[in-house]
Image 1 (cartoon, rainbow, N blue to C red):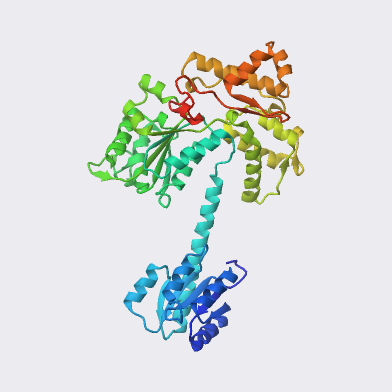
Image 2: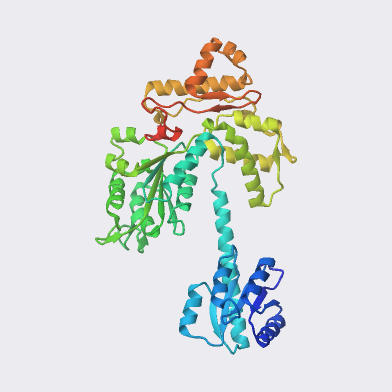
Length: 485
């Protein structure tokens, strides 16, 4: 309901005098009133008129019973609030109406002040409910996963498989790849979706405070503990807790997290009392946890409890064909959220963004797009608007050492980036690229096959995906990331 109009009310009663009486009360207060003498007429009016805010509904109606009509009203996508009225009210019928979603139950004869009080309260609740739905829709849109690359399709399949279960999920991925979005997508599609999603950045909390943050503390448990605090695990009761960058957690705290996973128990700092919690754990890391275990920095028993369902968040350089989609998405979202005039990117500028090697992944791309939307003149962002570093092909970058396990993996990753860089530099022309890197065309074709690089003829773009790791055969792309590679 907009602020510029009074609410529209539908009165459903087979007694004409009741309908007239309610119309007089409501119209005197400035409300718009519709009338229906039966349940069938009421449902037809609601189908035709989408902006009814409240229904006064009699229980005893000809044809369909008022409670049946109430059930049908509540099934609508954005149902109005319903106040049930009856001349033969009983506690049983009032309870049943409330169970079916009625806001309130009024007995006849109806009194003016009582009617208006119920009306105002019901409208206030309806307004609050719509605000919550709108906030949820905007939040879901903000955390939407964007992309049509095969790696993203595989990621979506993995999310749909993992979400309905209570299994612990461990998300691997470089910084900025969207690990939080994956965690939220799993929660939103789970049976716990109506409960809380609590996020904890383990890398951002000082080691001396992480236990208090996760498990809570009693008053006086340590210097500065001036009052009792509820921990994140308790806050997430019935829902999901997301432990981001869990590889940065101390060994002492890891042992307590392991206890939560094994026993479903937490203990506040400074307390001897054990608290039972029902929480699903999703963790994420940008580290190679197997290497961390070898170096004594991560508990192997915690790793095996977390790594029940491993999911990989692919880096942006492995799904470059999604960059134009992401640019368009960030443009639209930024314009909507900031009441900003929409802008578009020139195809040449999009090609430059697609060719760039994004070390900060999707987060870096988003920041660059927003900066360009703010700073660039005109409605079209052109090549000359881009920072100097984005106007030419990006130099190939070596992968982070922790992201690969062997010397061969590291060498292959560097070589693949070099081949992609030279392909982009030479307009994806095989012959020209082979001459530029001083290798026979047949050898370059072998490299393309080895690295899973497919070039679409006539399109300034390549689809590049990593080949299966040794021993993995023909498993899905996400299967290669179970140890953080």
